[in-house]
Length: 183
Image 1: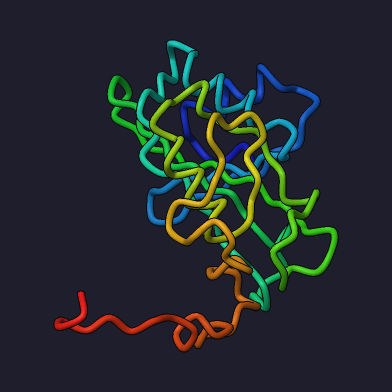
Image 2: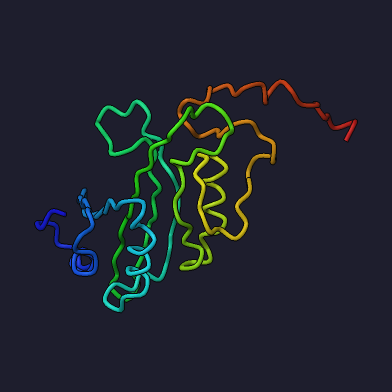
């Protein structure tokens, strides 16, 4: 982790996880921390529970697909947690990169796209993790109710993956049209 970034939480993380690999960056005053997927839950626990960090608010959980990104990334997908500490008046973005093992064009669960749920730390993460699961196919292990939230249960793909066609795979054409008179 670069030592020139002056963020109060980075020192605590270095002390608590001396053998783990981290990467930190800062852009326009916003600090981002990249963690290994296996370390993500414990790092987030430290950020939540350590009194000098106190990131009590999980502002967002989302994912990013870096397919065909012009810069080399540590993995194709990133799970992103946006944290806020009111006692420190601070914000931190934590990312963990995941790489799929197989083909990503289908509806199969990929073992490379699994990461621990943070619902035990922030109960409000439940719906946001479900959204990332539904749109990107990232499986949050330990989630209390991981099922689709925006598409139907048998939806055949994950629509925010960049290898998903822009017009969809027949979703727009294969439905019954209900007009005002027939509803």
